[in-house]
Length: 269
Image (cartoon, rainbow, N blue to C red; front, top):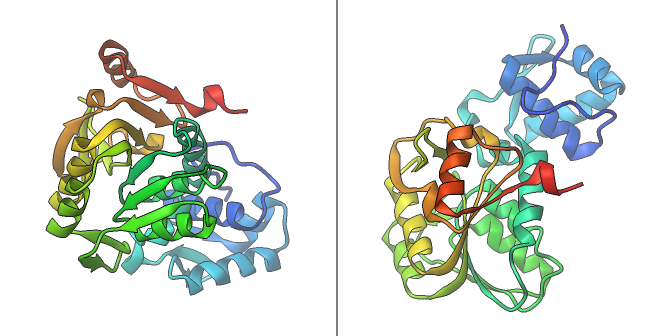
């Protein structure tokens, strides 16, 4: 059997984390994958694939089955797994979003893997003041040594390593930001912004209420995905950054509303 990620053409040979990201996408799309098939697909040795699989199993992303691997069911929504799924697309989105953020601004950053990766693209910026309830993003920014980072206090959601609840809302309400950078769990066909919990929605609303400009970062898998907590609309943000062109109806909404749509595959080399 042959495998290929559904979201984009396979690039071979791949190295390290990029290959692991593509392995995760294959396993997600196909249900399971065999070591020999993966080795043939990536044009590397079975031993190399086993090293990747060992690392991913150790991190709780995959588990072994006879002759291959499948997603670790208990961790199907594990943050680290979501982070590497569609990694190349999210990285493009982060790079494009970083170009919208000048030096010397106050920046609010939401929870989520794409906002975290966007923060990772700000390393060359100077004078940033970053405010976030996303501990992954906070640690990423801390590593720069050039950004001032302020994090929300309150209850830690261990599965995500973020701060949720009323304390996160109060945190964002206590400041005024030049830019609010945020992601969502999904965008419905009619353009509604969706998240997986009311707590996520309330924190996002606090960011958008208190930011002079807003940037929505997302990859194309978010369009049409289901999530139950609804608030906000794609036409009510200033910039939307996605790696590929959104559905035609969404593009038309954004055009009519005057939202700046950045399609990474059309602007990045």
